[in-house]
Length: 286
Image (cartoon, rainbow, N blue to C red; front, side):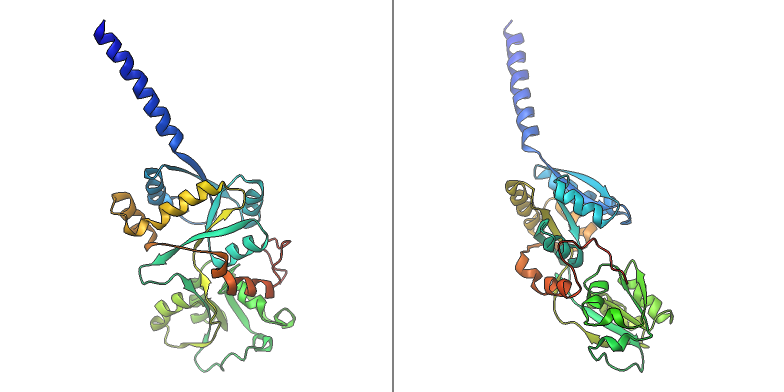
């Protein structure tokens, strides 16, 4: 009889502990792009790390950025990691705020646009006329790419051929293969690849810095949940757990640092020059 009572008490305590543990795990809906290769696999170690910190992450695929914006507006997703161009557009549209951004193993967390051309090309004048009758290659919706190009006054009126690619590496490769006359890319990518292409030269740059890979959070996300996410990610750098190590290794980062709208000062100005406003639907006519 006494044994039965002890078992009964144990089961009640176990049920209470289990219920409490489940209640502590908060759900966090993270948007990823359907077309982003291996995105789910890339974030798997980070998800395990957040799970260890009492945060259950649900990955929600968005077919495109326009759809992601609608998800932010509806409150069906809480956050998304994105480049500065998309993050800045979401901020301008009033849908999100920046929370944290990764710090690379090299120690940088921002980047800027550089303009690359073939050896012997004249320096970029800063004028839209420089692109007249040229083939220009860059990444779609990138601050160091399409957004920078459209921020140049009068550029839509010049007769340039625009080539959009999925990566800065690809833009440099196309330029090297003479499929383009000019490439606009991230400075860090160019610095890693320039020795491979000695016949390509830096002809200009935008020295304003853009936050890289920022986690933007929906304005509709519970501030307490956002604070918990921020705390967990900011502690990743010094966390000695296996989950933290695997997350840093898979993402190739040393950790995360706090990010605010002030860090986007240059990016927001750049996007506004490019014509981004609250009605922007993540596409340019030309």
